[in-house]
Length: 444
Image (cartoon, rainbow, N blue to C red; front, side):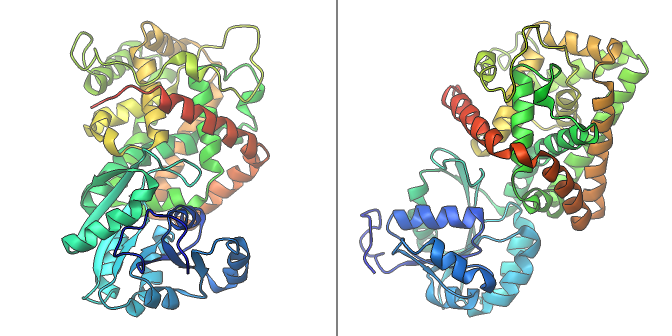
């Protein structure tokens, strides 16, 4: 089979990469790696074989096989790209067929069950080097974090994995499996919970927020576009990260608690207590005004975010919002002692946007005080805030009870509600991410 690129170094011309699982991320890897000249052996469930053969018929570097046994026997480096909840079952099925001396890794967002499956079901002569691209399949991997985990491998095997994945042009971040799960919990679990809860709240009130005058402006554009972006993806991506990652449970539970307690303070009119709590969180997460941390450049420019609206902008100014979701996010970080800036090197584009709008709210003069005033005195968003609080507690309960099926059902019904607008939202969301990330300042 002729190679189509010179990116394959001398001595690795016969090196074969296997992909078990051809969902969106598996296909992205297959296309990127094969375009760089690597030979790919890939499979998914057997009923998808013929469909995948047709889809990759024009790519001479990708060969679709019928099952993971054939992929495992033919490949020097095998990547399992399957749901986190299924990784144990799939590795148990195909792992024993791994060829002698091969390298095996996984692409799941939660490494705890993945590593346990590898240790239990792979032959002892197989090296384990896992990875995780910290972005979705529709995001250009160039410059994005790519976590590499040398769990049980020689230096030579690890270098081979780095060589293969270099064509993604991502930033390699070396972590242990435990470090990976802690950081992804800190940067993704609560962020996802916030957007999932927004979608449930708007769905509960049967509203498309971009069609009215209540959700207008830069911060609102981020909320709406990224909420739709999450619900346009597959449910198991978020369920697996939240339910299977032991580090994520306390974050999601604290987010629900922060949301509930702040909402109670607003309902009960306890202004001094609300202000003291929010300002304590502000100083803990963003630093005291005048401190070196406060002097750093902001992550986002508000004028950029204003450009990306799904609806028509009204002539009147946007309605003031208490931004309960953002107040709860920062309170959650504060309560758990999480410093989000410490994880910037392996943060997702979605997390950087969400941290950026939180920073914008807490660091823009007068904006935070206005939010607190609205939360105490204005009933405009009271119904939405109630449903948001209920939703946050609902997701937290799913996580604590490890209810995958309940999570799937909750996700699916809201996904169906917003589905007609996914295409346009993803296009706008991609443009927004691109513009924001290109203008993002360098942060330590």
